[in-house]
Length: 176
Image 1 (cartoon, rainbow, N blue to C red):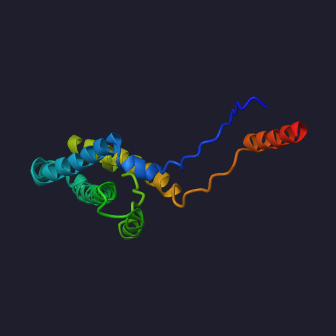
Image 2: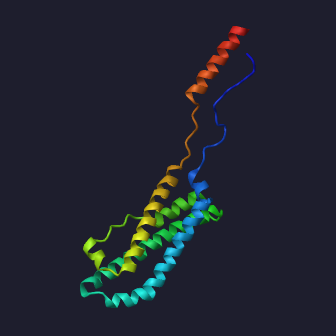
Image 3: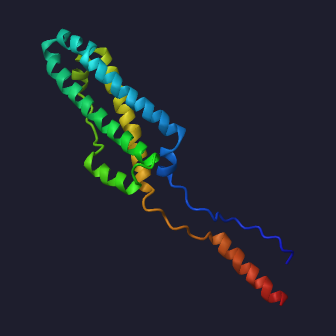
């Protein structure tokens, strides 16, 4: 044989999506966006939102109270998830500890408000709810991807590489 070995193998470890993602610029941007939304919502509900809640119809008062509580709960779940992931990225927490923390603070599914109730809410609150629900969906998706990475799969040799090895052995036997 000519000593030319063309092998298609990756001898490196599998990429851990969770570990690589929480250290990425994409995660840092998601973290900033999420925490900004939390702050923006808190400021709205404590200020302008409080004023707007006094102006809504009687029918909308209950919807306003319920939806603002749901929004606050959703954003606290999002903030908790983001803070845990950042702690993993900064080495303050192991992925195993993050998994334990995940069981304490669940990223629950949130029920969308009824359309007729939603339409009664002030426009700014509607916008915050929509943004929070989109962010929550992204985080649920990312959380599922990160969870899929545990445990790390064992690399399996490619069938092509196995056949190449058999051919190499056969050629060595025929040469010798």
